[in-house]
Length: 182
Picture (cartoon, rainbow, N blue to C red):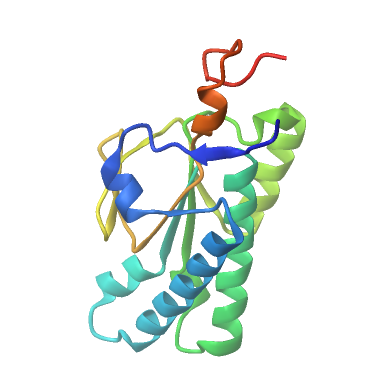
């Protein structure tokens, strides 16, 4: 049975309301269009430096496959687009941040490959905030459980999934995460 999973926001409605997800091709298209809109706004913003910094700060939440792939592609897309089309935006003003609740990324691959990926992504300029949860969001901020607030107009949530209701409601044995035991 392969009905897929659904995004879980762990009951945090503000994050659900103010973040992008990466589950479908439609999600990717919406995010791409948003990023281009943000770059247009940042390109026009010459007076308010704090606003420009917020516009050019992109936050991805989750250090599994979805989050790591998203943060890497986002980093490449934003920086390549700026180099090509937005000459008045400095690459040094762009911040791509991955927030992860664990001390490692890609735990499914093992420690060595996870550390290798972390090193390569850091070399590309991606920042990591480890051992930290995003606990809240507004349209312009991400609030972390350590008390920090990141000013951003782009929050991408890849931090949690759960089985679809069809799977969860089947009359069979499930594990504690409602997945079918096979």
